[in-house]
Length: 118
Image: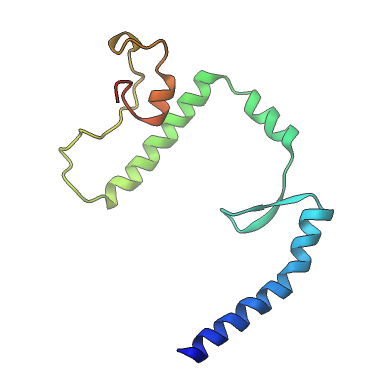
């Protein structure tokens, strides 16, 4: 076990030494940021992202969000365990009527998938 731990430590240190120059170059000189989802360096432009985000109105964003969430829920359904008839914690994809809960707006509750009285 000691030899295995020692070998792993040496391997990790070697990887760090080899990858550090590239990381410094990418972050300091190329203006890139690390994308932990894809494990790579990407060129990030705040102005491009702002243009993309600000070009979408709230209704289109929510519609896109609900469509993406439905797709993800269908993926999870196939592998989910439990009683399918139990809907006590299930969030609806339909907008909530604010009059039912005495709140002004329910969009945030709908996006989070919770009832306004939670």
